[in-house]
Image (cartoon, rainbow, N blue to C red):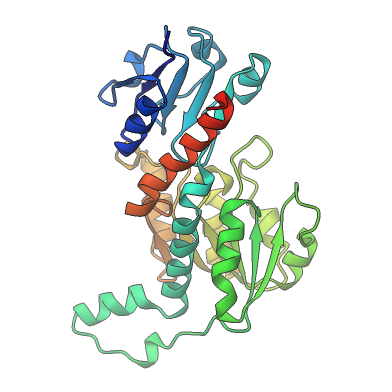
Length: 302
């Protein structure tokens, strides 16, 4: 009997096509709400971020694998999956190039004041001196998290003649975190959201940098405390900010306090934001599928 796979989010059509070619029976139901998802009778589940996969929910089925069409796995109870021998796949390889390019784009925008200069010219204000920028050459960037995303960024930055420092708790060959605090002009975050990293970037963390820095986050919003970010901007310890993610990305449901805090942060002209699209390109749409297919094939030795 063919193994059954349920796809509950929009993914590139090639994924279902490839799975069927491998002999799987595939049900595509991206229209389901989170409360309507039923995994009973399926051996595989493919999703992006539709629902939180708790141990209680996973136990309602008999899954053999969970494939996330993206990088982060913070919505999945990994400990329970391991205890039940359920394989969990992510597709970090699929969007690493997209993330690296996006971070560089945001960094260049801050360095050369591209976003503010564009707004001023559109408003009829031709202010050359006010939009004098600075060059990346010779600056030191610290990269925290040196997996697929961090390494992709480092590789793409090499042509800018920057000093690149990387720290990863699970990669001993990288630099010490203390060295990044000492030397970095720019910090880019590429780490998963865990209990250890939740609000890791707080006032104490920011205060450890010996120089004012530009902070960039394209990993998970909850890694940064927005209260600390605002304080860092106000004090001048943060001289630039590029966020592709926020702690609460349901902007239509923000409380008055959340709205006020974001207004205060975004009022600083050296800030730039994007709606969690660093890894979201036409190419990564199908590259993610390719990465997942290869992992599923390896798991079943197909």
